[in-house]
Image (tube, rainbow, N blue to C red; front, side, top):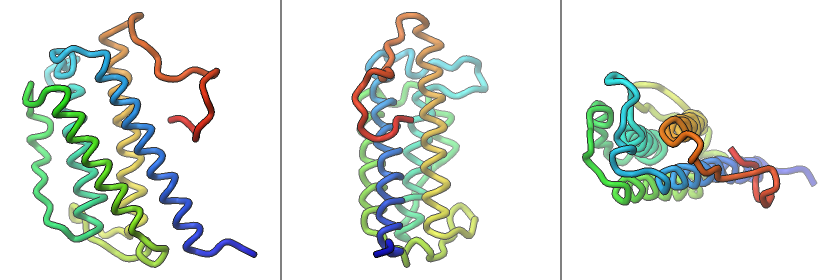
Length: 174
């Protein structure tokens, strides 16, 4: 028996959820190694801190994967994500990000194959629901790697890696 469109949709959604979970785990690992001032450190005045990136990830995920897909009211203040300095401590940032990922994953879980093909307008862009997910999840992963880099840049040789080739194989790591 060949797979159905719903089977394909469920598998795609599982993969998107896995990427978000892996990214969140990596961000959590980085935050666990940093002091408050390191979370808000900017390599240069015009560049973002890890704190800014976490606020941005939460805002983008909520705008594209939650409000954008469900039609809920979007209260995102994008510019404030990049202007914030020392506005949240580690636990607040992590909680905000965890809640955003949880909400997005719940929305993803509720979708059928037909839902993925529906059209939405998000940030002025006309996209399918699948397109919205395919935009926001890689965006999340990309900024996760920036957070890892900023953590390594600050910690140097004291940085503790999260994964090694000898680690348990449970889903493809990012």
